[in-house]
Image (cartoon, rainbow, N blue to C red; front, side, top):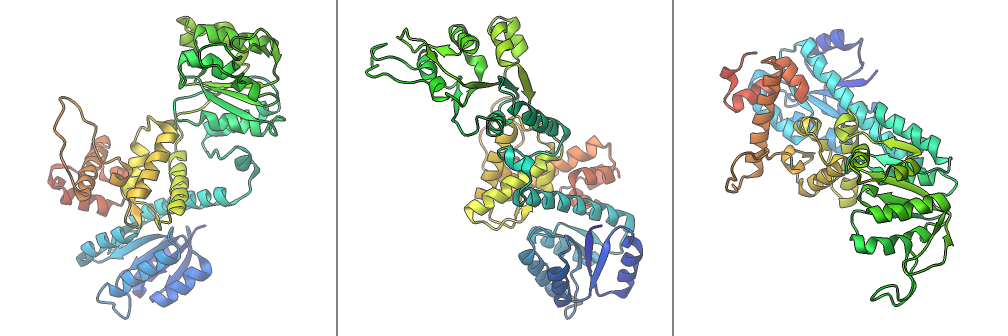
Length: 459
């Protein structure tokens, strides 16, 4: 059970929350900021409800905001849900901008509050797991060269890596660009008997065809203009180790033949040479092409495919990895925040919703780059969607002139679009739309009023 700290000086509300939440949470109570901070240090609850009107300023919000700042300074990942009266809505929004997870109005509707608390507990659990994965010495994660994942597809990938690593056979890794094919290749190498020998990667699609043969197999002195000395190729450098051929689908037919000969006979000849050179190297190949289609249209040899594809590992695209997306986003955020010396507590609810609904065509590589960009651009405790580069809608139709917008304008535009999209998706069901966006019903109603379409949508 999650610990829930309730910071409230109204005995009636305390009694209501104690009655309604005791079965689901380990409840802690404080009526003053100093008492709350003592409990936070001693018990370390991950979820807090906070009344802004705390003594000695029970009629105002000064003491509540001071308490909120102290909580977030001491434990930045704590999920604080601010409880507000009817006249404190602007203060509640200010609290969310300060770093509160969400706000909820009084009088309290317990079923709705339970939804908000449950979602906060879920996010807190994910962040806690992220921290544990980073700090723990769990063999599975450490040995897989920094590959993280909890979804069933990635668990299957991990299982395949462990099984194939000890078998000295060629491996073919399939997956879209940016899914982490080289990380998987390195993990196979590091868990194999060849781990103490070189891992030599080469991107077959990044080197001009007329240079690729020499890059792979080396050349003899005088083999072509400018070849003044003998040069070993990547295959020779991988002797007793692993050669990783990324984008193998880009190899020309002639190079496919030479690679097939090496796989069959374990010998190569340098460009311009006649001597057979024995090389003991394991081949791991990868491609983002539809390899079966390439075989059918004749651009890839089927006999080479059968040689390199003794075992095939297929990586799922990021959009199919469920909660792994948020897990990875938080891992990247923690890493880049530490590297750049920034104190960023996390993503706002709107950012988390934007991350979840985006299709991620560039997969993990795109997510990593966007989070890195957001850390560079962020000047506040939490990251908002515009800083992730998810604020601009896709352009369609004729080219339109560039329009300069402020960060606030971009944020408002994305906010409006996401609320409208969610409500349309759930055919006007505000409760489901709020849940999909990771906010409370009162918050979504405020956003509807803010953007001027509250009266046009049914609840």
